[in-house]
Structure formats: C-alpha cells, structure tokens
Image 1 (tube, helix red, strand yellow):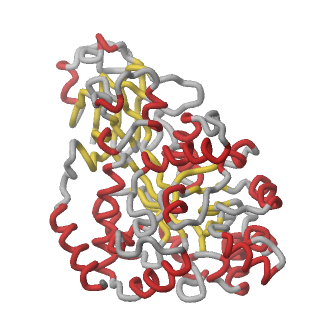
Image 2 (tube, rainbow, N blue to C red):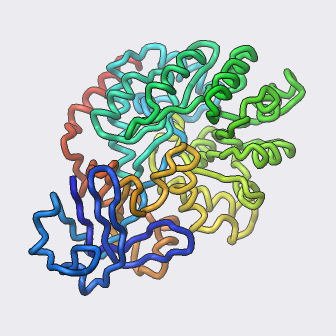
Length: 437
C-alpha cells in the first residue's frame, strides 16, 4: 500500500531533532520519505521537489490521510510481555510472586490448548494497538498459535525463548531462530525463563547455542529479593553474576525486571552491553519493588520499557508505564529531575527497538519500517501544546491514540480494528477464562 500522511506534526525521535510540521510517505512496509512542509502548503505539495498539486498526483497514493495537525511518531515497543496470559486478567491478583506463580498461574496454564493461546494473543494484540504499541517482545512457552495470531493480524512480534527444566530445549530454540531469520514481521531471540527454573546443564547448553550463532540471550533476572538470596545461597553469586560466569551474555542480550541488582551487577550490565527492560507497573502490583532505573541510566546502561504480562499487570498500556518509569524514580530519589520525560520516551521507542533486535523500527526516517502511531492532540489532556514530549509522558493516555500502523498497514484507526471481529475475539477468550477458572 502507498500511503501519504500529511499536515502532521512529526516527532522522528532522531537525536536533537525537534517536532516539525510535514508529511510521511510509505510504500509497502517501508517509509520512503519524511519531509518538512509548512502547514499552509500541506494540502497542495505532494512530491519531494515540491512541484505538482495534490490533485494532479492523486493516482500515486492508495490513501492520503490528513493528520489535521496531530502528532506522527514511531510506535511504542513493549519490550517484555506474555501476550497469551490475557485469560488470567483479574484472576490472579493481590498475591506475592511465588504464590501467584505456583498456586494460580502455572496450574491454569497447564489447562491451555493451542486455540486458547491463539485467541488470547489476538486479544492482547488489540490492546497493544490501542496504546500505540507497534511491536512486542513476547515470552511464552506456546509459540505456534502466537505466530499464527501475529500473521493473521499483521502484527510485529519478537519471540523470546522461554526455556526451563519443564519445557523448550536449546534445540527447539535453534530451529525457531533459523525459521524466523529474515522474516518481515516475526523474529526470535534466545531466552530462558529464569535462573531458578533452569538447571545449570541446560543453561550451559543455551549459552553454547547462542554463542554458536553470535546471538544475544534474554531472561527474567533479580525480580525479587528472595530470588537473589536463594541464588546467592546456591552459587555464592547474584543471579546475573552466576549467569555471566556460564558465558551466557558473550553476545549481549537483556534482563527483564532487574529490581534488585548487586553492586557488582552494574558493571556486568555495562561491560556486556546488556539492556535492562524495566516493568514498573507489574513490579509494583506484585510487590517486587522498584528497579534503580535512574542509576542505571546515569551509568550508561541502556533501559527499555515493558508491561510484563496481563496477569501480573492487567493493563498493556505503555502510557502508564512511561509515567511510572519516571514518577517512581523521582519519588524514591526525592529528586524531580530524575529520568527526564525525553529519556522515558526514548526507552519506550528507540531503546525498545534495540533491545529487541529490530533496529529498523527505531525512528521515522527514509528506509525504516513503517511502524507509526498518530497521536490525537486535540484532546483536553494534550492542551496546551507547550511541550508535546512532556505531554506524552506526563499526561498522555490511550485515548490519544488515533491510529496505529505496523509494517505500512493501518491496524487501528479511530477506535476500529479493520478486518478484525472483536466480538468473536472477546467471546473466545471469555470461554477460555471461564473453562479454566
């Protein structure tokens, strides 16, 4: 599809480039042009040279969209989630992590089948789209139905290995890595659930498999104090130091949560170039704590942002995560300057792209993937437009998402999901939730 989005305020997320008025052109799945155009010329200028009127070149576009002065920017990247867990929303609340996992989540997941996972994933994709999220880093032990759901929707997913002593081997991850290599929308990264669910022999095999392909590795790490203490009792090291001692991160990767790092962990994170994917809402709701994000950023450790799954968070909303990511750091540091809004926006877009290994989705620029969100600025919470970046982080919400584009296709627009039967999706997920409950 050939799209022309004009009369837009554009935030490319390029370093030091301010918001400007202009238009974006898309051919197929790629951006072909991002250019400034004065607002008074927006409806008449339609080519790179500025020659020719809109009417004389109308046949070039499958669709032209007047953005009406609203904000066009890169889509958000949810860098840690478990999409199929929508069936557990509000079914496993007000419990600490160990109880939550062992008494509710694991037994319920044992009842799932492929069809359940397919429809629960479809529901998650709807919610991602409503908050302007154009890609997710999804960790789940069921993968084929999630792949089918993503292909049916046209949604961008990077799958993270979920190996542990109960499911998924390094051989299975090898096959998935090769299978999705070069796919337009779907990718795979090596990963395992956590140190405490994965035996050392399997951990060593995962490290060797990733090393053979010069691939990064990702895992849950230091989410709770109990996890850290138990690992220290077993190994004499923190979870991160123990995993690093096995050669797990020779090609980088990332850790989800990292709420309770040891002092030595900061240097490991920096030396290995690891991304920390923080999940502030989930960590709060499970009582796990608050990750020291401000310190990590000060040390040059890259931080990305995720919601975690809909069972622990309940809400797959990147706007809420952005506010919490900065608000919590200001609170625990008693410093209103901690973690500037621009840094948070970078965490939710550029850093997420890099953490997930999809570097062509980071900014709006020629040749990049056409993954974009149109933010409605004509809403009370966005007025006045003193600083659009700060508005997004401090007062923005899902109600401001007017359109979400993934791979050049409009998947959400003005409250509608083109080609998707939302009632059928809701019905199927309700059936799953009721049966398992």
